[in-house]
Image 1 (cartoon, one colour):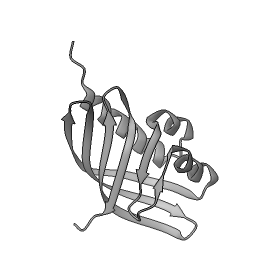
Image 2 (spheres, one colour):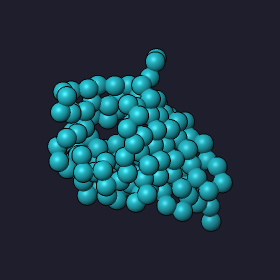
Image 3 (cartoon, helix red, strand yellow):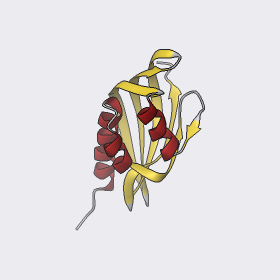
Length: 123
């Protein structure tokens, strides 16, 4: 029997993007690893608790997360996704729409998002 770790990572990523766009806190609890390391495009780094707290409190409201494209690289022990999304988020400072290039890492033995790093896309 062969396990499709890359497929599991993509399925988890799709679930996470949908949960972010609808502020589904229960689903975010499921799809984010407990030791999450989330680096935003502005350089801010959050753990799982802080990422979820900001959505729960209304400090950050994702209004849309649209996948533009991605490639998957399956490695021994983990899957890395290199992609591009458009994110529409409401913050205390006002609305923000960004196109982001991202790297996401998912472990084979735990397909929840383990690490995320994004930068503003130049193209």
